[in-house]
Length: 86
Image 1: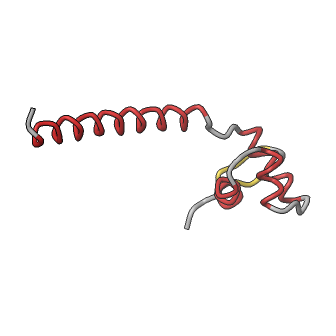
Image 2: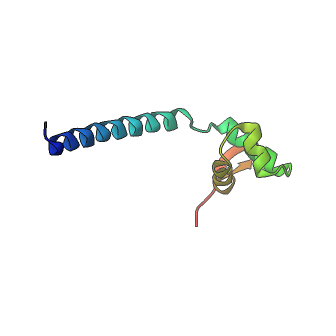
Image 3: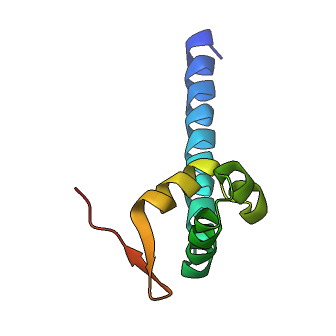
């Protein structure tokens, strides 16, 4: 087999691996959606002045996700409400 054909086969196989990894990553992200209960707990911890890094450790949710939740949601009468965006 020529070097050119071999390179094409290697490139095709690499593309297939990347596609499979992308599909697996998408499936994992759908399984890890943050629930309303988790959002409520995060907001309550923030109100109690717990640092965001500690909230991330306690809830096992990424610190940047904690940041996004605190910017997007609030508690009104004990219910999670999506804030209005600017």
